[in-house]
Amino acid sequence: MVSSKEIMIKDNEYLAAVYKRKPVVIQEGTGAILKDVEGKEYIDCLSGISVTNAGHSPQRLVEAGAEQLGKLIHCSGLYYSVPQTLLAEKLASISPKHLRKVFFCNSGAEAVEAAVKLAKKYSVWKGKAGSGVIALEGSFHGRLGLSLTLTGQAKYKVGFGSFAIYPGVFHAPAPYCYRCPLQYPDCGLECARRVKDVIKYHTTGDVAAMIVEPVMGEGGIIVPPEGYHPKVRQICADHEILYITDEVQTGFGRCGSMFAHELWDIQADIMTMAKGLGGGMPIGGAIYTDEIVQCLQSGDHFSTFGGNPVCCAVALENINYLQEEGLIDNSKKVGDLILRSSKELIDKYEIVGDARGLGLMIGIEFVKDKGTKEPAVDETQALAEHMFGEGVLVGTGGVHKNVLRIQPPLCISDDQAQQVFALLEAGIKKL
Ligand SMILES: Cc1ncc(COP(=O)(O)O)c(C=O)c1O
Image 1 (spheres, rainbow, N blue to C red):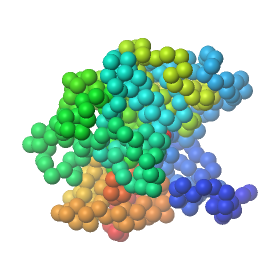
Image 2: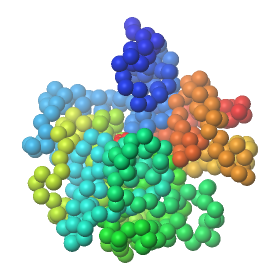
Image 3: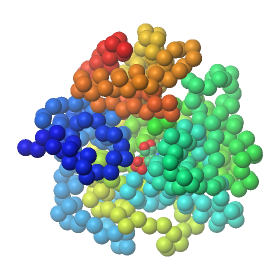
Image 4: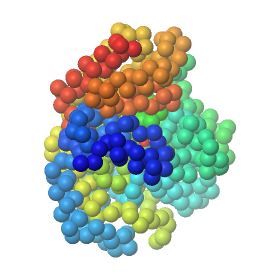
């Protein structure tokens, strides 16, 4: 049997070190539990960064993938294929009614680029120049050229020169109530109104699209206040700007409904998806209205691997599984439980500044001082290490790197959630 140590040494030798890994070699997983090569178990509270919503390797997904592997592994988008067509049909049936035409790619960043690229084409088709795109400060949309430019966090861009700064991208303030100098609801949703200022003062008025995460994930699990999304959506409609909802992280039950933006009763023109779509298989996509895809000509966009038959077969089974096993309801139920307990920590501990989330997308923000809200970065890291030592994998993130992320598979049980929470509170006490 290969040991963790051997793998870590080889990994350091042969892999480009783009990210510092946690010192664990994961070998297998079932439900919300992961096991390393030595057999130690972990409760997974990050789901491979919000990917394995159905849990790790459910039998139905494994069988769907194995069956498709035996039939056809790849054929490219030059030809029709059964799994791709059936998955597109399924996506059209679970998406808001007006979103009907799917483009498949392999990741979230590619989905974002496909969404914005087609929005630009549509805007040119409608007689605009198609130059401007608005995103939010604190947002995350990926690490490719355009998606990295759209990402509203400088920390991801440092050291890459002009690659990370395309022209025509503008940022509006994030709906980050905890760190806003104004108080909701007295603020009158000033952050939403500021989108109008961005259009007026920063752009030439020629804006193809605005892209918004329903809940900002990498930015620190930021849930916008009530009324924010409808107001921004209305501003976009008033200015004939396409509204793109980036559901890469929030989709497929993560927030307690199939897609999170539906919780605000708004209609997006384009929706992106990836992460939770494939149950762990690398697949992403964007879904458009019939009207938008009218601008397309053959060859306008393509991806060699996009819509791969094995990925599509597993993704289709994954969505059926999420629905049939009631995992989206479980996301809401267990998510509410964890959030309620997390909010109680605010009054109990000086270091807990805020707790927020929707469904099983929960963030706890740590501060050195409740008055100054100075981010407790080292303490957040120490808490994540403590959890790791106790056999729980959590994430850290946020604009200020002081948010602990709890995003387990949606099949996590009440008991597992309570166990995680007890370990978390013990860790906070220790801090
Ligand atoms: C909202 C959002 N969009 C896009 C992306 C990029 O996804 P990927 O890492 O698959 O390229 C992410 C990744 O975290 C995300 O959270």
